[in-house]
Amino acid sequence: MDGRENGLLIPAAVLGGCVLLGLVFGGWTLGSQIKETKLADRYVTVKGLVERTVKSDSAIWPVTFKETGNDLQQVYAKSEEDRAAVLRFFTAQGITQQEISVGQIQVTDKQANEYGGNNQGGLRYIVQQTVTVNSNDVDKIAKAGQKTAQLLQAGIIIVGGYGQGIRYVFNGLNALKPDMITEATRNARAAADRFAADSGSQVGSIRSANQGVFSISAADAGSGVGPGEEGGGGGPSPDASMMKKVRVVSTVDYYLVK
Image 1 (cartoon, rainbow, N blue to C red):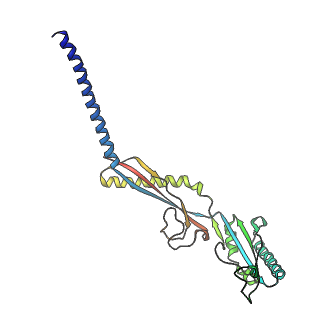
Image 2 (image 1 turned 30 degrees about the horizontal axis):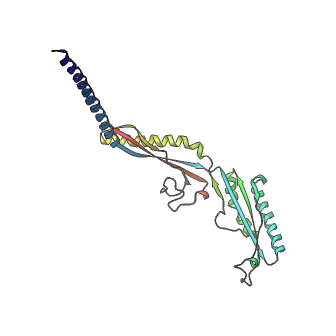
Image 3 (image 1 turned 180 degrees about the horizontal axis):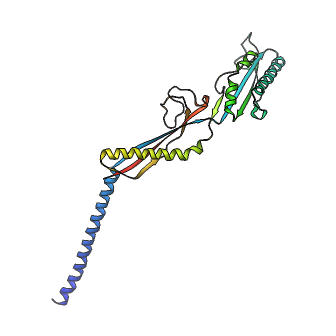
């Protein structure tokens, strides 16, 4: 074999080696991609539910009262008497001055109202005040709330409607979140393990996870409360209940492997 033939064989051998290495690498890459595709197609979505029953740690109680009449001075004087009576009532229930705030007086003149000028024979002035209690002693406020009939018996007209009545608030949610999220994730993993056992698979790594939305409802509300919803099931308002139910549902996707 002469030098010219050797010169042709060497480049051919190099080219063949490169082609072989390319085929090997391409096969390995394709196999890896197929494996990853199969793995990505095999996963299970599970949910972990955790609930806690807690007691409210603060109470807000606005008491709104009003007086009406045609003599503004007399109506105002009667409203001030009502305010003094409400404050005496709160003091008698052990509520301190630091827990009480008095709102601004609201005066309505019906004759000055564009839509009320034709209301002949009605009382002209309405004077309304609100005294609000804000306390961390929820038991004390709940007990006092059972005695509001004493104000009615004293002739004080309590205004009802939205925002009235005692509102109970739970402020300790941030302290509960870490443990509840951990337990919800653990419950989700247990559900994934049960599914995998039934399907002849094993649970792999986490594909994706959503810690869920915390919700607070009345403890005695219906069980049909979804994540992020409050109340539900036609049950009582969360604000009206001293005992609360804190709820979170975590959603986790786990890969399944053979």
